[in-house]
Image (cartoon, rainbow, N blue to C red; front, side, top):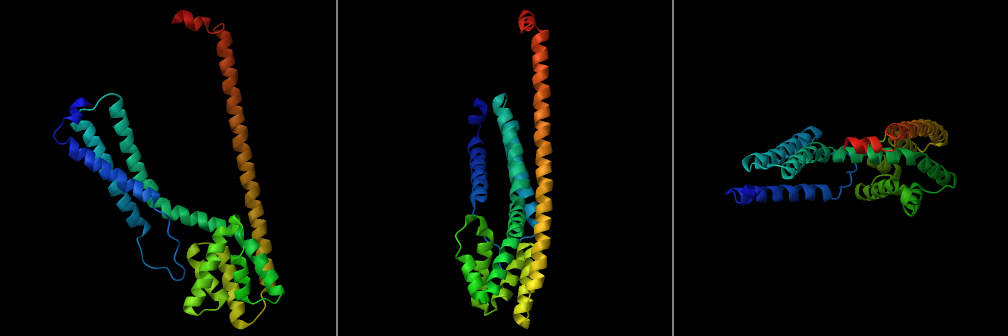
Length: 262
C-alpha cells in the first residue's frame, strides 16, 4: 500500500477517483424532477441512459482495478478497492440508470391505489352540483400526506388548464397520460368526454370504482398471502438452525469436544 502512495501517478489516480465519486454522489442526491404533463417530450431514452451508465460504471471500475494492479495493492486494501470497483459498476451501470423508470413505476402504483378515492371525491362533488374547477381545487386543498402524488397531479392539471385554457377534466386527462397509470387515465378521459359532451358519467365512474376496488383488494390479499409465506419460511429456517445448533451443542458435550480439538 505504501508503494501505491508514493507512485508517480498516485495523485492523478486519486484525483480521478475523487472526481468520479463526487459525480456519483451528485447523481445520487439529485432531486427527482416532476414528470412533464401533456404530450411526452423527447428526452434521453432508457437505452441511452443505460449505455451512459454502463460506460461510467465500467470506466470507474476499470480505474479502481488499474489502481490495484499498478500499485500492487495487497491484503485488505486490495479487497476494499475491488469491492469498490464492483459497487461502482453496480451503482453507476445498473442502479442509477434505472432510477427514473423505478420512480415512474412507483408513482404509477401510488396513483393507482389513490384512484378509487379520487373517483369517490369527484362523484360526491358532481352530485353536489359543484363545478369541475371547484372539485379539483378542493381536492388540492386537502392536506393528507398519503394523497400527495394525486394532489400533485391535480395541481399540475389545474395549472395546465390555466396555461393552455383547457377544460378542467381535459387538463386532468392530459396530465394523467404521461404517468403510466392506465386506470387513472381511463377515469380522466371519461370525465373529459362527459365534460365536453355535457353528459353524466355517474354510471361509468361507479363501475370503474367498483372494478378497481375489487382488483386492489385481490392484489392486497395476494400480497398478504405472499408475506405470510415468507414469514413462515423465515420461522421454519430459524427453527431448523436453532435445532441444529442445539444438537451440535449436545453432540460436542457443551463444546468440550471442540475445545479439546483446538
